[in-house]
Amino acid sequence: MKLSIITLTLGTRKVYLDKQVQFIMENILEARQDDIQVEHFVVQQGGHVESTQKHVQYFGGYSFEFIHFPENIGIGEALNRIVPKCTGDFILKLDDDAIPINPDFLEVSRRICNRFPDSVWSPYPVGLINNPGGPKGYRHAVYHSGDRFFTMRFVGHVGGFARFAPTNLMKQFKFQNDLLPGVSGNEDGQFSSFCNSNGIKMFYLENGCVVEHAESTLGQIARFPEYFQSRTYESQVQIEVITDAN
Image (cartoon, rainbow, N blue to C red; front, side, top):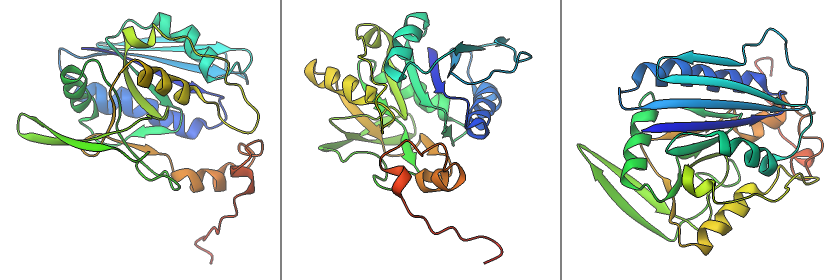
């Protein structure tokens, strides 16, 4: 299996992006099997880029390419430009604050993608305070693979935080502009509607494959209040921050 990973960033939360890339380069690369290859596109929209940054790197079965767009064109249009570059069998779209947790993340992903090659799915997200684990499902099923059992929660919507999709399916879809004031975009809603209209199954994996929303949604607001100033909801959230000095 070959996996294409797309990470979009504004370059303002480098602390999270660095952790994500480090995990993929070290943990996933070390754990990979001979039949797994990964290409990773990190796309920064706007902001300053250090001229010393290596834009293309290769490590055995892992390749990394950094791409810079001078302006923020939105998630949807950025995907329109990057998806055609993907040569993997599946695309994993990751937010820049999505950090895989389990060392066998890639191996579990391979099992799920190979068994359900026409489905769109998400690892289990932790750190989403208002919607723990993602949207509610309409049914569950258990997938028995080797010596492991994985629970699937079927849903009508998969968020764009960490989303696996068949590459050929994403290449059939063109996203509309989602550079919208007050929100982070709606590309996930657009793609979920497309999947629903075409009978594409969507699910969340309840176990075995976990991605952390770094420091939780509330922790991020506390750490980067300026980042969320333009967000309608986040900019109004009042958070109690307890420190070691309290």
